[in-house]
Image (tube, rainbow, N blue to C red):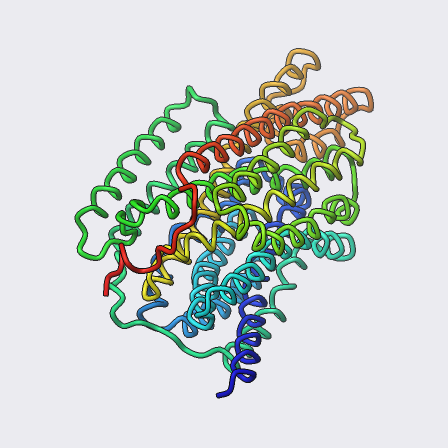
Length: 514
Protein backbone atom coordinates (compact mmCIF):
# COMPACT_ATOMS: atom_id res chain seq x y z
CA UNK A 1 0.00 0.00 0.00
CA UNK A 2 1.47 3.39 -1.02
CA UNK A 3 1.66 6.40 1.28
CA UNK A 4 -1.37 8.10 -0.29
CA UNK A 5 -3.64 5.08 0.16
CA UNK A 6 -2.40 4.62 3.72
CA UNK A 7 -3.30 8.20 4.54
CA UNK A 8 -6.71 7.82 2.89
CA UNK A 9 -7.35 4.62 4.84
CA UNK A 10 -6.27 6.31 8.07
CA UNK A 11 -8.67 9.20 7.57
CA UNK A 12 -11.53 6.81 6.81
CA UNK A 13 -10.81 4.99 10.07
CA UNK A 14 -10.70 8.33 11.90
CA UNK A 15 -14.06 9.26 10.37
CA UNK A 16 -15.66 6.02 11.58
CA UNK A 17 -14.16 6.46 15.06
CA UNK A 18 -15.52 10.01 15.22
CA UNK A 19 -19.00 8.82 14.20
CA UNK A 20 -18.88 6.14 16.89
CA UNK A 21 -17.68 8.63 19.48
CA UNK A 22 -20.25 11.21 18.44
CA UNK A 23 -23.24 9.25 19.73
CA UNK A 24 -21.58 8.88 23.14
CA UNK A 25 -20.67 12.55 23.38
CA UNK A 26 -24.15 13.85 22.52
CA UNK A 27 -25.92 11.36 24.78
CA UNK A 28 -25.29 13.11 28.09
CA UNK A 29 -25.84 16.70 27.01
CA UNK A 30 -28.86 15.90 24.86
CA UNK A 31 -30.36 14.19 27.91
CA UNK A 32 -29.60 17.17 30.15
CA UNK A 33 -31.91 19.28 28.02
CA UNK A 34 -34.65 16.65 28.35
CA UNK A 35 -34.47 16.51 32.17
CA UNK A 36 -37.20 19.10 32.81
CA UNK A 37 -39.57 17.23 30.46
CA UNK A 38 -38.71 13.88 32.06
CA UNK A 39 -39.25 15.36 35.52
CA UNK A 40 -42.66 16.65 34.49
CA UNK A 41 -43.73 13.38 32.79
CA UNK A 42 -42.61 11.02 35.55
CA UNK A 43 -42.86 13.47 38.50
CA UNK A 44 -39.21 12.67 39.17
CA UNK A 45 -37.31 14.07 42.14
CA UNK A 46 -33.90 15.72 41.83
CA UNK A 47 -32.31 12.52 43.14
CA UNK A 48 -34.05 10.45 40.45
CA UNK A 49 -32.91 12.89 37.78
CA UNK A 50 -29.35 12.53 39.05
CA UNK A 51 -29.66 8.76 38.67
CA UNK A 52 -30.99 9.12 35.13
CA UNK A 53 -27.70 10.89 34.33
CA UNK A 54 -25.42 8.87 36.59
CA UNK A 55 -26.69 5.36 35.76
CA UNK A 56 -24.95 5.90 32.43
CA UNK A 57 -21.86 7.60 33.83
CA UNK A 58 -21.23 5.06 36.61
CA UNK A 59 -21.58 1.92 34.49
CA UNK A 60 -19.47 3.61 31.86
CA UNK A 61 -16.71 4.61 34.28
CA UNK A 62 -16.70 1.31 36.20
CA UNK A 63 -16.26 -0.92 33.14
CA UNK A 64 -14.03 1.15 30.86
CA UNK A 65 -10.71 -0.27 31.99
CA UNK A 66 -12.01 -3.84 31.79
CA UNK A 67 -13.52 -3.34 28.34
CA UNK A 68 -10.30 -1.66 27.22
CA UNK A 69 -8.36 -4.75 28.28
CA UNK A 70 -10.93 -7.02 26.60
CA UNK A 71 -10.51 -5.06 23.38
CA UNK A 72 -6.71 -5.36 23.57
CA UNK A 73 -6.99 -9.10 24.11
CA UNK A 74 -9.90 -10.18 21.90
CA UNK A 75 -10.15 -7.48 19.24
CA UNK A 76 -10.92 -3.76 19.41
CA UNK A 77 -13.02 -3.72 16.25
CA UNK A 78 -15.09 -6.65 17.51
CA UNK A 79 -15.91 -4.93 20.81
CA UNK A 80 -16.66 -1.67 19.03
CA UNK A 81 -19.29 -3.35 16.83
CA UNK A 82 -20.84 -5.15 19.84
CA UNK A 83 -20.91 -1.84 21.74
CA UNK A 84 -22.63 -0.02 18.87
CA UNK A 85 -25.28 -2.74 18.61
CA UNK A 86 -25.97 -2.56 22.38
CA UNK A 87 -26.10 1.22 22.18
CA UNK A 88 -28.86 0.93 19.61
CA UNK A 89 -30.79 -1.53 21.80
CA UNK A 90 -30.38 0.66 24.90
CA UNK A 91 -31.49 3.77 23.01
CA UNK A 92 -34.65 2.03 21.80
CA UNK A 93 -35.44 0.81 25.31
CA UNK A 94 -34.87 4.28 26.81
CA UNK A 95 -37.14 5.87 24.20
CA UNK A 96 -39.94 3.41 25.06
CA UNK A 97 -39.58 3.83 28.86
CA UNK A 98 -42.78 4.37 30.84
CA UNK A 99 -41.24 5.07 34.25
CA UNK A 100 -38.15 6.59 35.83
CA UNK A 101 -36.93 3.15 36.93
CA UNK A 102 -37.22 1.76 33.40
CA UNK A 103 -35.38 4.75 31.99
CA UNK A 104 -32.60 4.42 34.56
CA UNK A 105 -32.22 0.71 33.70
CA UNK A 106 -31.82 1.38 29.98
CA UNK A 107 -29.46 4.25 30.71
CA UNK A 108 -27.34 1.68 32.55
CA UNK A 109 -27.36 -0.51 29.42
CA UNK A 110 -26.25 2.51 27.41
CA UNK A 111 -23.40 2.92 29.90
CA UNK A 112 -22.28 -0.67 29.22
CA UNK A 113 -22.44 -0.03 25.49
CA UNK A 114 -20.49 3.22 25.83
CA UNK A 115 -17.82 1.40 27.85
CA UNK A 116 -17.36 -0.99 24.92
CA UNK A 117 -17.26 1.80 22.34
CA UNK A 118 -15.13 4.59 23.73
CA UNK A 119 -11.81 2.87 24.58
CA UNK A 120 -11.99 0.94 21.32
CA UNK A 121 -12.14 4.16 19.29
CA UNK A 122 -9.01 5.65 20.85
CA UNK A 123 -7.12 2.33 20.89
CA UNK A 124 -7.80 1.81 17.18
CA UNK A 125 -6.53 5.33 16.43
CA UNK A 126 -3.36 4.70 18.44
CA UNK A 127 -2.80 1.50 16.44
CA UNK A 128 -3.49 3.14 13.05
CA UNK A 129 -1.56 6.37 13.66
CA UNK A 130 1.98 5.43 14.64
CA UNK A 131 3.78 8.67 13.68
CA UNK A 132 3.85 11.14 16.60
CA UNK A 133 2.63 14.30 14.83
CA UNK A 134 -0.13 12.48 12.93
CA UNK A 135 -1.21 10.76 16.14
CA UNK A 136 -1.38 14.10 17.99
CA UNK A 137 -3.50 15.57 15.20
CA UNK A 138 -5.82 12.52 15.17
CA UNK A 139 -6.24 12.69 18.96
CA UNK A 140 -6.98 16.42 18.74
CA UNK A 141 -9.70 15.75 16.16
CA UNK A 142 -11.02 12.85 18.29
CA UNK A 143 -11.11 15.13 21.36
CA UNK A 144 -12.78 17.94 19.44
CA UNK A 145 -15.48 15.60 18.15
CA UNK A 146 -16.24 14.58 21.73
CA UNK A 147 -16.48 18.23 22.74
CA UNK A 148 -18.43 19.22 19.63
CA UNK A 149 -20.90 16.39 20.16
CA UNK A 150 -21.38 17.49 23.75
CA UNK A 151 -21.80 21.07 22.53
CA UNK A 152 -24.35 20.49 19.76
CA UNK A 153 -26.22 17.85 21.75
CA UNK A 154 -28.41 20.52 23.37
CA UNK A 155 -29.21 22.04 19.96
CA UNK A 156 -30.28 18.68 18.56
CA UNK A 157 -32.16 17.91 21.74
CA UNK A 158 -33.84 21.32 21.75
CA UNK A 159 -35.07 20.90 18.18
CA UNK A 160 -36.36 17.39 18.86
CA UNK A 161 -38.00 18.15 22.21
CA UNK A 162 -39.63 21.29 20.84
CA UNK A 163 -41.11 19.34 17.91
CA UNK A 164 -41.58 15.85 19.38
CA UNK A 165 -41.55 13.92 22.67
CA UNK A 166 -38.36 13.78 24.78
CA UNK A 167 -38.00 10.12 23.71
CA UNK A 168 -36.92 11.40 20.28
CA UNK A 169 -33.46 12.21 21.70
CA UNK A 170 -32.90 8.45 22.01
CA UNK A 171 -34.42 7.55 18.63
CA UNK A 172 -31.79 9.89 17.16
CA UNK A 173 -29.06 7.38 18.06
CA UNK A 174 -30.44 4.56 15.91
CA UNK A 175 -29.39 5.76 12.41
CA UNK A 176 -25.99 6.86 13.74
CA UNK A 177 -25.45 3.39 15.21
CA UNK A 178 -26.23 1.77 11.85
CA UNK A 179 -23.78 4.07 10.02
CA UNK A 180 -21.09 3.34 12.64
CA UNK A 181 -21.49 -0.44 12.34
CA UNK A 182 -21.34 -0.32 8.55
CA UNK A 183 -18.24 1.89 8.69
CA UNK A 184 -16.53 -0.52 11.09
CA UNK A 185 -17.25 -3.52 8.88
CA UNK A 186 -16.05 -1.78 5.71
CA UNK A 187 -13.07 0.33 6.76
CA UNK A 188 -11.72 -0.48 10.23
CA UNK A 189 -8.89 -3.05 10.58
CA UNK A 190 -8.95 -5.48 13.48
CA UNK A 191 -6.21 -5.04 16.06
CA UNK A 192 -5.41 -6.84 19.29
CA UNK A 193 -2.56 -8.08 21.46
CA UNK A 194 -2.95 -11.60 22.84
CA UNK A 195 -0.25 -10.84 25.43
CA UNK A 196 -2.65 -8.49 27.20
CA UNK A 197 -3.40 -9.84 30.71
CA UNK A 198 -6.77 -11.42 31.47
CA UNK A 199 -9.48 -9.05 32.80
CA UNK A 200 -9.39 -8.37 36.54
CA UNK A 201 -13.01 -9.14 37.47
CA UNK A 202 -12.55 -8.89 41.28
CA UNK A 203 -11.05 -5.44 40.76
CA UNK A 204 -14.08 -4.48 38.66
CA UNK A 205 -16.46 -5.66 41.41
CA UNK A 206 -14.62 -3.83 44.20
CA UNK A 207 -14.37 -0.57 42.25
CA UNK A 208 -17.96 -0.70 41.02
CA UNK A 209 -19.50 -1.20 44.47
CA UNK A 210 -17.20 1.42 45.98
CA UNK A 211 -17.91 4.12 43.40
CA UNK A 212 -21.68 3.49 43.25
CA UNK A 213 -21.87 3.63 47.06
CA UNK A 214 -19.93 6.91 47.09
CA UNK A 215 -22.19 8.53 44.48
CA UNK A 216 -25.33 7.17 46.19
CA UNK A 217 -24.15 8.67 49.49
CA UNK A 218 -23.62 12.09 47.89
CA UNK A 219 -27.06 12.07 46.25
CA UNK A 220 -28.62 11.06 49.58
CA UNK A 221 -26.90 13.99 51.29
CA UNK A 222 -28.76 16.35 48.97
CA UNK A 223 -32.09 14.63 49.67
CA UNK A 224 -31.85 13.61 53.35
CA UNK A 225 -29.03 15.67 54.82
CA UNK A 226 -25.89 14.55 56.64
CA UNK A 227 -27.82 13.21 59.63
CA UNK A 228 -29.51 10.37 57.70
CA UNK A 229 -28.09 6.98 58.84
CA UNK A 230 -28.13 5.60 55.28
CA UNK A 231 -25.75 8.35 54.20
CA UNK A 232 -23.08 7.13 56.61
CA UNK A 233 -23.78 3.47 55.81
CA UNK A 234 -23.21 4.23 52.12
CA UNK A 235 -20.01 6.16 52.85
CA UNK A 236 -18.74 3.26 54.99
CA UNK A 237 -19.44 0.75 52.20
CA UNK A 238 -17.63 3.05 49.75
CA UNK A 239 -14.55 3.30 51.99
CA UNK A 240 -14.42 -0.48 52.55
CA UNK A 241 -14.72 -1.43 48.88
CA UNK A 242 -12.44 1.31 47.54
CA UNK A 243 -9.80 0.28 50.10
CA UNK A 244 -10.29 -3.37 49.10
CA UNK A 245 -9.85 -2.36 45.46
CA UNK A 246 -6.53 -0.63 46.16
CA UNK A 247 -5.21 -3.55 48.22
CA UNK A 248 -6.32 -6.05 45.59
CA UNK A 249 -4.68 -4.08 42.77
CA UNK A 250 -1.38 -4.06 44.66
CA UNK A 251 -1.28 -7.86 44.88
CA UNK A 252 -3.25 -9.02 41.84
CA UNK A 253 -1.17 -10.83 39.19
CA UNK A 254 -3.20 -9.07 36.48
CA UNK A 255 -4.44 -5.80 38.01
CA UNK A 256 -7.27 -3.90 36.38
CA UNK A 257 -5.36 -0.69 37.07
CA UNK A 258 -1.58 -1.17 37.24
CA UNK A 259 -0.67 1.20 40.06
CA UNK A 260 2.89 1.57 38.76
CA UNK A 261 1.48 3.78 35.99
CA UNK A 262 1.02 6.49 38.61
CA UNK A 263 4.76 6.60 39.28
CA UNK A 264 4.93 8.66 36.09
CA UNK A 265 4.21 12.31 36.97
CA UNK A 266 2.81 13.12 33.53
CA UNK A 267 0.36 10.21 33.72
CA UNK A 268 -0.72 11.12 37.26
CA UNK A 269 -0.97 14.86 36.73
CA UNK A 270 -2.94 14.54 33.49
CA UNK A 271 -5.42 12.08 35.02
CA UNK A 272 -5.98 14.19 38.15
CA UNK A 273 -6.56 17.29 36.02
CA UNK A 274 -8.94 15.45 33.68
CA UNK A 275 -10.95 14.08 36.59
CA UNK A 276 -11.43 17.45 38.26
CA UNK A 277 -12.10 19.16 34.92
CA UNK A 278 -14.83 16.63 34.09
CA UNK A 279 -16.19 16.97 37.64
CA UNK A 280 -16.79 20.67 37.15
CA UNK A 281 -17.83 20.52 33.50
CA UNK A 282 -20.46 17.75 33.82
CA UNK A 283 -21.80 19.07 37.10
CA UNK A 284 -22.25 22.52 35.57
CA UNK A 285 -23.84 21.18 32.37
CA UNK A 286 -26.34 19.25 34.51
CA UNK A 287 -27.43 22.57 36.05
CA UNK A 288 -27.21 24.83 32.96
CA UNK A 289 -30.09 23.27 31.04
CA UNK A 290 -32.39 23.23 34.06
CA UNK A 291 -31.54 26.86 34.80
CA UNK A 292 -32.36 28.12 31.31
CA UNK A 293 -35.61 26.16 31.03
CA UNK A 294 -37.02 26.02 34.56
CA UNK A 295 -35.76 29.39 35.86
CA UNK A 296 -35.42 31.64 32.81
CA UNK A 297 -38.49 29.97 31.27
CA UNK A 298 -36.85 29.33 27.89
CA UNK A 299 -38.15 26.69 25.50
CA UNK A 300 -35.83 23.70 24.91
CA UNK A 301 -34.62 25.10 21.59
CA UNK A 302 -34.00 28.58 23.02
CA UNK A 303 -32.10 27.05 25.95
CA UNK A 304 -30.03 25.05 23.48
CA UNK A 305 -29.28 28.13 21.37
CA UNK A 306 -28.10 29.92 24.51
CA UNK A 307 -25.45 27.22 25.03
CA UNK A 308 -24.54 26.79 21.34
CA UNK A 309 -21.65 29.33 21.21
CA UNK A 310 -19.54 27.12 23.47
CA UNK A 311 -19.21 24.55 20.66
CA UNK A 312 -17.07 26.65 18.26
CA UNK A 313 -15.03 27.92 21.22
CA UNK A 314 -14.24 24.33 22.21
CA UNK A 315 -13.44 23.28 18.64
CA UNK A 316 -11.10 26.17 17.88
CA UNK A 317 -9.26 25.94 21.20
CA UNK A 318 -8.90 22.17 20.88
CA UNK A 319 -7.31 22.46 17.45
CA UNK A 320 -5.04 25.29 18.68
CA UNK A 321 -4.07 23.26 21.74
CA UNK A 322 -1.71 21.09 19.64
CA UNK A 323 0.42 24.13 18.75
CA UNK A 324 0.12 25.70 22.20
CA UNK A 325 1.09 22.41 23.85
CA UNK A 326 4.09 22.03 21.53
CA UNK A 327 5.29 25.55 22.36
CA UNK A 328 4.49 25.80 26.09
CA UNK A 329 4.37 22.18 27.23
CA UNK A 330 1.61 20.14 28.85
CA UNK A 331 1.95 21.73 32.30
CA UNK A 332 1.39 25.32 31.17
CA UNK A 333 -1.23 24.50 28.52
CA UNK A 334 -3.41 22.44 30.87
CA UNK A 335 -3.05 24.92 33.72
CA UNK A 336 -4.21 27.80 31.51
CA UNK A 337 -7.18 25.72 30.38
CA UNK A 338 -8.18 24.80 33.92
CA UNK A 339 -7.92 28.40 35.14
CA UNK A 340 -10.09 29.65 32.24
CA UNK A 341 -12.77 27.06 33.06
CA UNK A 342 -12.53 27.96 36.74
CA UNK A 343 -13.02 31.65 35.93
CA UNK A 344 -16.11 30.84 33.87
CA UNK A 345 -17.71 28.94 36.78
CA UNK A 346 -16.81 31.67 39.25
CA UNK A 347 -18.23 34.37 36.98
CA UNK A 348 -21.53 32.51 36.62
CA UNK A 349 -21.72 31.91 40.37
CA UNK A 350 -21.55 35.67 40.95
CA UNK A 351 -23.89 36.85 38.19
CA UNK A 352 -26.64 34.21 37.81
CA UNK A 353 -30.10 35.16 39.03
CA UNK A 354 -33.77 34.86 38.11
CA UNK A 355 -32.76 36.83 35.01
CA UNK A 356 -29.28 37.23 33.55
CA UNK A 357 -27.73 39.39 30.82
CA UNK A 358 -26.88 37.12 27.88
CA UNK A 359 -23.63 39.00 27.31
CA UNK A 360 -22.40 37.56 30.62
CA UNK A 361 -23.56 34.07 29.57
CA UNK A 362 -21.60 34.45 26.32
CA UNK A 363 -18.44 35.38 28.24
CA UNK A 364 -18.97 32.39 30.56
CA UNK A 365 -19.31 30.05 27.57
CA UNK A 366 -16.24 31.55 25.88
CA UNK A 367 -14.05 31.06 28.94
CA UNK A 368 -15.35 27.55 29.56
CA UNK A 369 -15.06 26.47 25.92
CA UNK A 370 -11.48 27.70 25.63
CA UNK A 371 -10.64 26.09 28.96
CA UNK A 372 -12.04 22.70 27.92
CA UNK A 373 -10.19 22.76 24.60
CA UNK A 374 -6.85 23.62 26.22
CA UNK A 375 -7.26 20.90 28.87
CA UNK A 376 -8.78 17.80 27.29
CA UNK A 377 -6.62 17.21 24.20
CA UNK A 378 -3.17 17.82 25.83
CA UNK A 379 -4.18 15.65 28.81
CA UNK A 380 -5.31 12.81 26.55
CA UNK A 381 -2.10 12.95 24.49
CA UNK A 382 0.01 13.05 27.67
CA UNK A 383 -1.71 9.97 29.11
CA UNK A 384 -1.46 7.93 25.89
CA UNK A 385 2.18 8.88 25.28
CA UNK A 386 3.24 7.51 28.67
CA UNK A 387 2.09 3.96 27.87
CA UNK A 388 3.55 1.23 25.66
CA UNK A 389 1.50 0.36 22.53
CA UNK A 390 0.28 -3.00 23.91
CA UNK A 391 -1.40 -1.17 26.81
CA UNK A 392 -3.23 1.29 24.56
CA UNK A 393 -6.61 -0.17 25.52
CA UNK A 394 -6.04 0.27 29.25
CA UNK A 395 -4.60 3.72 28.65
CA UNK A 396 -7.53 4.93 26.57
CA UNK A 397 -9.96 3.32 29.01
CA UNK A 398 -8.36 5.05 31.98
CA UNK A 399 -8.43 8.35 30.10
CA UNK A 400 -12.16 7.87 29.52
CA UNK A 401 -12.73 6.61 33.07
CA UNK A 402 -11.36 9.83 34.53
CA UNK A 403 -13.82 11.83 32.43
CA UNK A 404 -16.84 9.70 33.29
CA UNK A 405 -16.02 9.18 36.96
CA UNK A 406 -15.26 12.85 37.41
CA UNK A 407 -18.50 13.66 35.59
CA UNK A 408 -20.55 11.27 37.75
CA UNK A 409 -19.10 12.76 40.93
CA UNK A 410 -19.72 16.26 39.56
CA UNK A 411 -23.40 15.56 38.93
CA UNK A 412 -23.71 13.85 42.33
CA UNK A 413 -21.78 16.33 44.48
CA UNK A 414 -22.70 19.61 42.79
CA UNK A 415 -26.25 18.35 42.34
CA UNK A 416 -26.40 17.38 46.03
CA UNK A 417 -25.05 20.79 47.06
CA UNK A 418 -27.66 22.55 44.94
CA UNK A 419 -30.44 20.22 46.13
CA UNK A 420 -29.55 20.61 49.81
CA UNK A 421 -29.77 24.41 49.60
CA UNK A 422 -32.92 24.18 47.47
CA UNK A 423 -34.73 21.94 49.98
CA UNK A 424 -33.67 24.16 52.87
CA UNK A 425 -34.83 27.36 51.16
CA UNK A 426 -38.22 26.01 50.01
CA UNK A 427 -38.78 24.70 53.54
CA UNK A 428 -39.92 28.18 54.58
CA UNK A 429 -43.10 27.61 52.55
CA UNK A 430 -44.36 25.14 55.17
CA UNK A 431 -44.63 27.86 57.82
CA UNK A 432 -45.62 30.71 55.50
CA UNK A 433 -48.34 29.06 53.45
CA UNK A 434 -49.85 26.22 55.46
CA UNK A 435 -49.31 23.74 52.61
CA UNK A 436 -49.91 20.07 53.39
CA UNK A 437 -47.07 17.64 53.93
CA UNK A 438 -47.75 15.84 50.64
CA UNK A 439 -47.63 19.08 48.64
CA UNK A 440 -44.46 20.19 50.44
CA UNK A 441 -42.82 16.85 49.67
CA UNK A 442 -43.61 17.37 45.98
CA UNK A 443 -42.23 20.91 46.06
CA UNK A 444 -39.07 19.73 47.83
CA UNK A 445 -38.49 17.03 45.19
CA UNK A 446 -37.30 19.40 42.45
CA UNK A 447 -37.97 22.83 41.01
CA UNK A 448 -39.84 21.14 38.14
CA UNK A 449 -42.09 19.28 40.61
CA UNK A 450 -42.72 22.58 42.39
CA UNK A 451 -44.00 24.08 39.13
CA UNK A 452 -46.38 21.14 38.69
CA UNK A 453 -47.60 21.44 42.30
CA UNK A 454 -48.21 25.18 41.83
CA UNK A 455 -50.70 24.48 39.04
CA UNK A 456 -53.18 23.07 41.58
CA UNK A 457 -53.03 26.03 43.97
CA UNK A 458 -54.82 29.38 44.09
CA UNK A 459 -53.05 32.15 42.08
CA UNK A 460 -51.46 33.98 45.02
CA UNK A 461 -50.15 30.81 46.65
CA UNK A 462 -49.03 29.42 43.28
CA UNK A 463 -47.02 32.58 42.61
CA UNK A 464 -45.37 32.30 46.04
CA UNK A 465 -44.42 28.66 45.41
CA UNK A 466 -43.05 29.40 41.94
CA UNK A 467 -40.96 32.41 43.00
CA UNK A 468 -39.63 30.74 46.16
CA UNK A 469 -38.67 27.50 44.41
CA UNK A 470 -37.02 29.32 41.50
CA UNK A 471 -34.97 31.51 43.84
CA UNK A 472 -34.06 28.46 45.95
CA UNK A 473 -32.75 26.67 42.83
CA UNK A 474 -30.69 29.72 41.86
CA UNK A 475 -29.22 29.98 45.36
CA UNK A 476 -28.17 26.35 45.33
CA UNK A 477 -26.86 26.54 41.76
CA UNK A 478 -24.68 29.57 42.53
CA UNK A 479 -23.04 27.73 45.43
CA UNK A 480 -22.46 24.70 43.19
CA UNK A 481 -20.78 26.82 40.51
CA UNK A 482 -18.60 28.50 43.12
CA UNK A 483 -17.40 25.08 44.30
CA UNK A 484 -16.81 24.03 40.67
CA UNK A 485 -14.70 27.14 40.07
CA UNK A 486 -12.60 26.51 43.17
CA UNK A 487 -12.11 22.88 42.11
CA UNK A 488 -10.83 23.94 38.68
CA UNK A 489 -8.34 26.40 40.12
CA UNK A 490 -7.10 23.77 42.58
CA UNK A 491 -6.70 21.36 39.65
CA UNK A 492 -4.56 23.97 37.86
CA UNK A 493 -2.38 24.34 40.95
CA UNK A 494 -2.02 20.55 41.20
CA UNK A 495 -1.07 20.34 37.52
CA UNK A 496 1.64 22.94 38.07
CA UNK A 497 2.97 20.99 41.06
CA UNK A 498 2.72 17.42 39.71
CA UNK A 499 3.58 17.76 36.02
CA UNK A 500 7.27 18.08 35.08
CA UNK A 501 8.50 21.37 33.64
CA UNK A 502 9.38 19.83 30.28
CA UNK A 503 7.54 17.03 28.52
CA UNK A 504 9.63 13.90 28.04
CA UNK A 505 9.29 11.02 25.58
CA UNK A 506 8.20 8.38 28.06
CA UNK A 507 6.54 5.81 25.84
CA UNK A 508 7.13 2.21 26.76
CA UNK A 509 10.41 2.18 28.61
CA UNK A 510 9.58 2.48 32.28
CA UNK A 511 6.33 0.55 32.33
CA UNK A 512 6.53 -1.80 29.40
CA UNK A 513 5.19 -5.24 30.06
CA UNK A 514 6.54 -7.02 27.05
